[in-house]
Image (cartoon, rainbow, N blue to C red; front, side, top):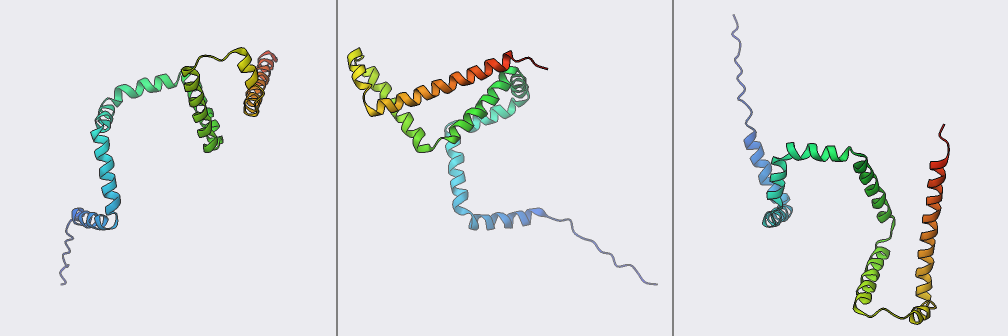
Length: 161
């Protein structure tokens, strides 16, 4: 009578395969690994990793508080407003936004450092092309704001049915 052949498969040792993959990764992605280590070290030096560890440790306490705050009408409005502001900022050309921020900062610093101009000096500056262009933009924004308020008022007063 035939005897069965015993077949014993040794248990799979994943550590050898993992070690081989790590050795290949060192060769294939060495520069990326070094850059990642530098990023981790910088985060550690600034205490960011410690903060993250603390946040993860207290997540069971902090998360319910964040969720409760987000469920309020104010939290919902804040999230929606952030999305709208994000869309607005994304619609601007980066060069235009940079130019505006630099111009505003320069104008504010200039206005703080000097004595306020006289009304006559202000009136003379109104004739300048750049001033008229800025006034056009400002008046257009104020007009659009007024129209949106008017539409909102009409929507509130309109009977719902």
